[in-house]
View (cartoon, rainbow, N blue to C red):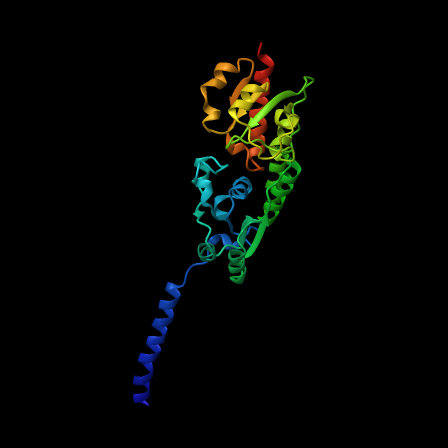
Length: 282
């Protein structure tokens, strides 16, 4: 019996020590996962990023898309984006982060989506809104999925703010986008232009989505207001200022063109400022 005790005690001590070691090495559960009502999230789309930072705190968002750190593609102010982690968008990265929810574009590659779903991750995909109403619906859906419906409703109310009343006739305006193209009438920015008292110079001339307008065409048939959102050679040409004395030429931030959500109040404010400038011109 003494021999048995001598043989068993070292094994018992070894097993106990091994158990303690494994417990010490086990990863701690992230604190955010303790709140089942607010799932942890990874976003793979810059437009969804912009909504997410309005409705969910950084502690809930494991990563935004890397586009939100790029001033050329982000709709989020740099100091705000810096508060959030980012991901390159590979399935391996997202799976390693272990989010409860992944937000992505409807154009998420199917192999990536399949890999995420095989890993047990919930994936929600969204299109690009083409109207204010669609954008509001998207904000509400993202907020609901995030467990932040109240925050979503408050934000939706900002987006749905009515246009400023005016009795003045619409102002003829050409929105000259990057690449010297124009927006079609069935777009979010076109709806905002109409709601803020602008008439489409492009549509009146039979132009549609992504049609190109050259410098020569602008000079030959100038609008009352030229909103320059690109930096092509023609859009920066000295002839614009030299020959278009009767046209108000203003810069328009291209970051206000591509996403709904928080860009809508910003675009609306910019258009109202431009409209006010038109009204005080001699």
